[in-house]
View (cartoon, helix red, strand yellow):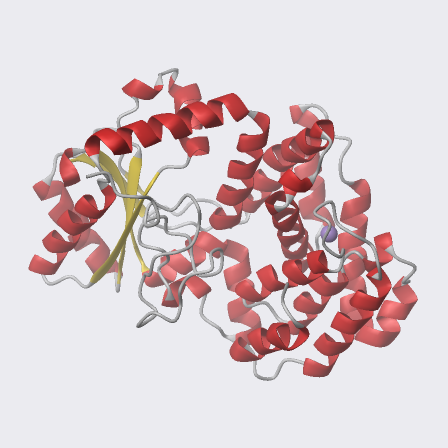
Length: 394
Ligand code: MN
């Protein structure tokens, strides 16, 4: 759990003018309010709002949002009142905490898919201040990360279903792909344990027979770009079991027919570099028809911009490649949160300075990356599923 001074320091690092006093007061207030309550994990309940606040600092959000993260369960779960929060932390924080509390109260009770769609719309409409939604998503993300501690399988299922139907699509809707991916992945593991197991096993078998092809393909791509004078960061990963499963469902194919299970990202300095990189790749390897998408000339509705193409070639495999600038990359992963952080503190999105782990492309914020290593360039992460940590098949 983040200590008080660590949390404050994290905020100060990207927003030197942040109200330190308020953050300290919120920390102590929440700790006292939650008292001896415990989480399903056996941890003090208080560790939950602090972890939520930690996720929000990773998004470099303003002090009011961080305080809201720290306080978000106090009205619902303790004797603290709205008036108290307003007196101690001001009107804005009180309004935000109230918003999160209201969302928590109307949560659940969504059985059919149609109801889920209505509920998503409702959540969006309720959150006239987008920060309410960001705190709610961080709250859900931490609850999903600790889902396995809940003993009652029906309860786990209900939470996972709600996440898959409401919160993951909502994160996607506002362009927060990294949140969406992690939420969907944990929910999938809970809801379809057999499919999850079988796909994970297939991926392992494939790795054993062919070796880890990701570093090979990265090397191929890097060499091509460097030879042509394009400065680029290349990261790659196996697609997640959830996205593989979704493809199998959509196209009604089995795992064996699914040829592209690796995806790569090329991050370059400018838009001309993006198109030059694309040209080089298409000249070098044949592209797969029907898979090319230019979301730079035509962005998605949530603002997402990137080039997507699939080619047959790097490491002698069919691979999906996304090409974008650093700026697009930051926005692609954090969407609205990135816009908000930029608006309030002028900070660049976390992604802009840190392209993520080389072999699973989680950003520094979602992993405990070994930041100490040399620079802000990609470094191996400590995520259990990251291939950088897997024993290499020879
Ligand atoms: Mn909570």
